[in-house]
Image 1 (cartoon, rainbow, N blue to C red):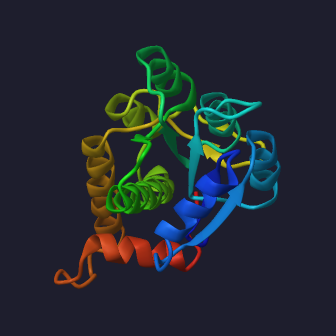
Image 2 (image 1 turned 120 degrees about the vertical axis):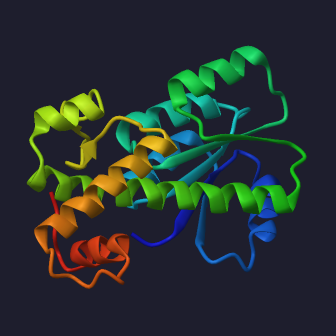
Length: 210
């Protein structure tokens, strides 16, 4: 998947300002003027990150992001708001699984950093779940369930992608270490000077999937 982000706001001037602020960043920027249109675009094109305004004329940003979360759980979600309230924040976190909040008026550097962090989060999580496929080949699922409760109860989204439980950064790092050990156990003759993580990633780049 290419590094593509989706901007959603019902004010064309805001979309233009954000797009200008992101000019020169190493990813593609797509924009839509409503949550409804954004959902149609997401059905046709994958996005790593979606940034939505909260106050829109029809569908509110938190409502849109909640639907996006249910349909495309791998997409990282950011909410932009100029009218932050405690109730709105709680609703957005609980229903939309918001990764970060940004307030209007935003600082361009903060906006850029938030999106970079969101892209990194997306790629890190996707890498972890690719490694999970390798780990499945090397370990009993009962053992994995003891280490990461809920990880064996997998569902799939509308596109057939695995909807996996969210893990903390520490849990993701632990999962990587287990995958790297599994790879070395699989190939004990491998060069000990090599980075196991790079070797595991290389295997997946050549077609290993769960």
